[in-house]
Image 1 (cartoon, each protein chain N blue to C red):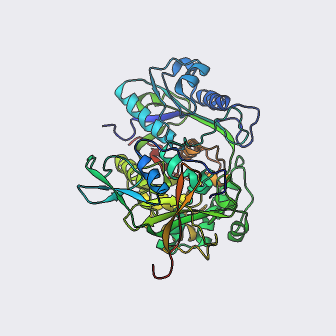
Image 2: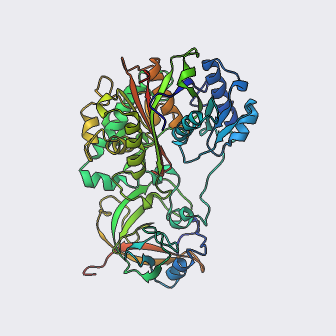
Image 3: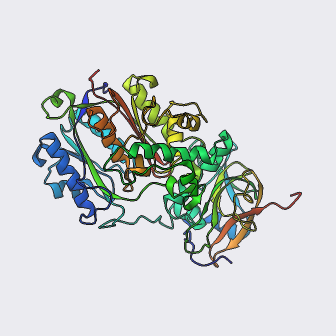
Amino acid sequence: MLKPGEIAVVGAAESTKIGVVPEMSQIMLHADAALNAMQDAGLKPGDIDGVACVGPMMPQQIAHYLGITPKWVDGTGVGGCSFMLHVRHAAAAIHAGYCSTVLITHGESGRSRINATPRPPEPESLNGQFEAPFGPMGPPTLFPIPVLRYMKTYGVTHEDLAMVSVVQREWAAKNPRAMYRDPITVEDVLNSRMIAYPFRILQCCLVTDGGGALILTSADRAKDFPTRPVYILGTGESVETTMVSQMQDFTSSRAFRVAGPTAIQAAGIRHSDVDHLMIYDAFAHLPLYGLEDLGFCRPGEAAAFIREGNTRPGGKLPLNTNGGGLSYTHTGMYGMFALQESVRQMRGTAPAQVPGAKISVCHGVGGMFSASGTIVFGNERP
Amino acid sequence: MLEPGRAKPKPTPETKHFWDGCRQGKLLLQRCNDTGRAYFPPRPFSPYTGSRNVSVFEASGRATLYSYVIHHRPVPGFTPPYAIAVVQLEEGPRMMTNIIDCEQTPEALQLDMKLEVAFVPMDEEITLPLFRPAKEGA
């Protein structure tokens, strides 16, 4: 069993530009971020012997484009949290001796659609037969489907949900790379354009271009790199279903309840040890589900936890400190950007740095509650 | 008949009975014979035990409104705003559907309201199971 802190992140970077990047195709966004991460780590493509990325991009495309000869690859594709699973799988592979230095890349031309691939459900798939005929059009129509049930079960109001967007904008205001930085109020959220009731445009993630890359190696080698190592303390993963209509419990994600606690237990930490938290926020309800399913709040209490200011700048549990998918960036598979912010916080280099942060939990979702991956990072080796 | 343009399901060997049933005005679910529990979507084995000892049965068509969104943007085959709903069938499973004969507003669409199945043809091959508010006393 892999012990906490045996593997470290020694390279991390986003694409040079994020937001609107029509001058780069999807594969170049991968490569741009990968080159930046290799520069960050002082490595060349010849130093990399493991590659992971998520479809539609395949590891063979990235390896060939960058000039890498891998001994290990991972193309796990479970949506926007695939990178958390790549980190987990890479840690195990390095520990097993299959490879020594892994590059994980993401690039997505979500906004400019340069070489982007559309993904309609096949009419013979279960989604194609039992969801598509009823009029869903992408994540804004599917991801919020459980929300009204959650609200009724726990007495959560529209104003409570709007607070998620308001608080994340407070964080985004501190981040020069965030797409939206102007402060917003609950009223602004509730008066913004309706997309799919109960959610309005300010409760839906951005659609942007961008990329990110991570480089992992064994902690014993990590001290030879130019940046402060960020140690992997614990990891978890799970999947549930591609059909949001078939998730077991509309008030909680089974995949979250497996991945999150698995990672926290593997790290050997308590919730009170966590200084910084990222919860993939494709839509405004996800931080509520994440806070509860990972055990930071009891069921139904996350809305009050956010309303009371615990997750805002200066609060006791800083959450989504880059501004999140709602205000920072969201290419389509945002998990890589959540990981980048956790690494920056652990290095002490985040634009909205949490003073003295030592442990960061980074929790991702894939599809519409389809999948989940959680990584616990630390900047001290246990 | 439905407005044209919806994504049309294509039955597979494992789901054909369900779509045949809809065309004949029957909502066919499956049951795990070992546990007695109903399940959906169709597959020829039990998702609870892995056993192939399962049977097809006709559901009552009664359901309640479990959750939904009201989509405000245009989609082929739909006139916005329209609700994309998940209903809780009396037998236990949930399914995605649309709610017809009902205003597509939060006021009209109350969670847990009683519903009944309505079979609406897309074309000669495919009939969709939609739901409408249950008649009084139903």
